[in-house]
Amino acid sequence: MDEKKKSIYINRKFMNENQKIFQEKQRIAVEKFGELFEDEIFFALELVYNQEFKQEINKEYKKIINSSKYIN
Image 1: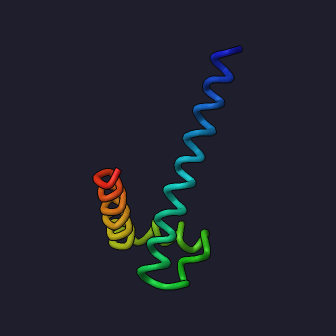
Image 2: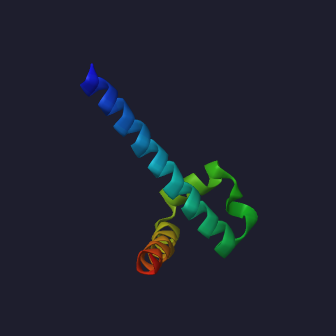
């Protein structure tokens, strides 16, 4: 039973981290491209179908993550 609880905990933590990353990328898109990307569904679809957009958002996200590592 402990193994099952552990796997549930890990899955929830993983989902929570993914949600935080998604929200941060969405915030970047809103700041960079405007309010159009405030809708989560539209933003998610744009990430799936527009590879240039996805690459640009990932690049900006990595810049922010790397700069925060150096600050800390």
